[in-house]
Structure formats: C-alpha cells, structure tokens
Image (cartoon, rainbow, N blue to C red; front, top):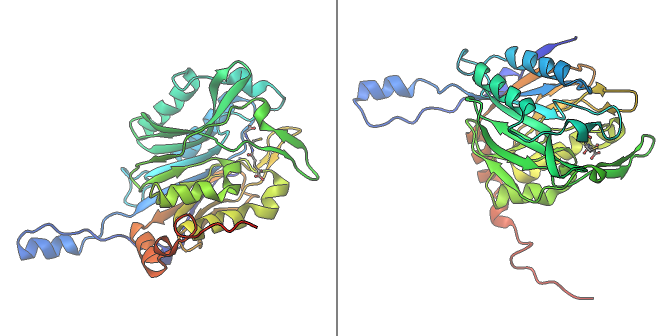
Length: 321
Ligand SMILES: O=C(O)CNC(=O)[C@H](CS)NC(=O)CCC(=O)C(=O)O
C-alpha cells in the first residue's frame, strides 16, 4: 500500500505566542520568548472496502504513523478520517446489515485506538444503527484522546442524485436524515461537524460560523469521481472563504468495489481560502498535516468584517412581485 506523510510548507505555519501572566520581569521575558507548540491537524485518505477488519487495520496504521502532539514537538492534536472509514458497501443492503449502535464493538474498537494512541479522532461517517430496521444514520463521531465520544453529528443532507456518467445514488433508501447542527470543542478550536454532500448546502456552514461560532469546519467525504473532479476543491475553498474558517476535508480515494469509486484529494484550507495541505487523488492512502493558527482566523475576520456587514436576514425587507 502506497503511504505518504506530508507536511504543510513551513512559511504557512505561524505559531501562536504564549500570553505571560504577571511574574518577575526576568521570568516574563523568558516565558514570552517561548512560542506555544503549534496546534496541528492531520487529514487522512484511504480506500475503504466492505471488509471491516481490513479497514480497521488501515485506520490503525494511519493513526500510528501520525506524529502525536504528546510525543513530538510537531505532533498532531486531531486526526480526521473520511466518511465510511470503517465500511463501504459493495452491494445494496450491506451497510444496513453491519450498522451498530455507538456502544457496539465496531465503534468501541476505534475508541480504544484513540485511547491507546492518545489522539483525538474525527471519524467521518459511521453506519450507526438507525431508528428502524431499514434505516441507519450516517454519523460523524468525534473521539477525545481518552477514547470518549465527545459529540456525534448525523448527516442532514442525503445524497439522492443521478450522477451523470456514473450511477443513481439514493442514500435516503437506507439512511435517516439527522436534524441537528453540531459544534464541538476540541484542542484545536471549535469544530463544526458535517459530512460529504452537506458541502453543497452553504446555509449549514453559515449557521455553523455565524450562529455557533465555529472556527474549523470538518467535511469528511466519499465524493463521487465525476462530481469531485467538477466541484470538490471549489466548494471547499468557497466554504472556507465565506465563513473565514479552516476547512478540513478527509476523503475516500479510488476504487472500493466493482461499482463504487471515490474522488480523493483530501485538503486542509485556511480561512483565506489557501490550500495548506493536500493528498492528491493518486496517493490513495496517507496523512497530510497542517498547523491551525487561531490568530489567523482573527486577523482574516478583523480585516474583512463580514459578520458586521451581513444584512440579509436582519434589515432587508422582502418585496412582493
Ligand atoms: O454510501 C456510503 O457508503 C456512505 N455515503 C456516501 O458515500 C454518500 C451517500 S451515497 N455520498 C455522498 O454524499 C457523495 C456526495 C457527492 O459526491 C457530491 O455531492 O457530489
């Protein structure tokens, strides 16, 4: 299996500086000259199949190959895995058969992985047992470094689309839609949790930023090859620019089965819309990392105060025709 570990270019990493509590001038100047370790995120790319065991082993390798914040000065605080990290069905109905509650053995194994590896994990889309026997939830699960589930987000927008030149997807046949917008505190900042096709609904990201104050938007995905080539990077950069948030998008890449193929190109994008880490489609499996500089969010927002300039939804009157 081809495997790569990529780092963001150095000049893009601006470490935040410690604020000094009051102390003797000597102690203050010693501490002030010390930069805080940068906050760092990793984005993982893989080609999951309908083999739970193989997928777990790949995830475990990706986690273990990632330098950890606790172990290394330049370690990663939070690693993001794509939608369907643990399972991609090869046939209709397979996902429903393997769906489990969050306290079932599949998710518990990933909780142990987070705990043993001492790292926070964003698990992009898990087949969570649903409200009835014919529906599951497509659930984004956030684990802390002790292996606890911190937050879960059930995918709101379901992919019922006839993709030109590909196939007809009808996610709602077997998936129940989520109904809640979810943000989560983490060591790298306030996260907005979303999944894949949600990316096409900018209102969700607007709410995450302007109502819920998210700083980093997560978009774990299994985009189709056709729609990914046409829209993936443009949509992700647009969401970063218009919300002035970091966007972290872990992707499935390559061929999962005879009928299913995904568009890779996992990305980390800064709040100005610059791509600061990338795993191209041809690198099927790997981790890319980048620094998260929360002061960069502040400076982008200060220089272009769109939150203050926002008028739709507050003072504009609707004119009837
Ligand atoms: O079925 C699974 O295993 C997991 N779910 C998915 O992969 C979902 C539903 S089929 N895929 C997408 O939302 C692709 C969106 C997309 O490609 C676009 O918006 O263009």
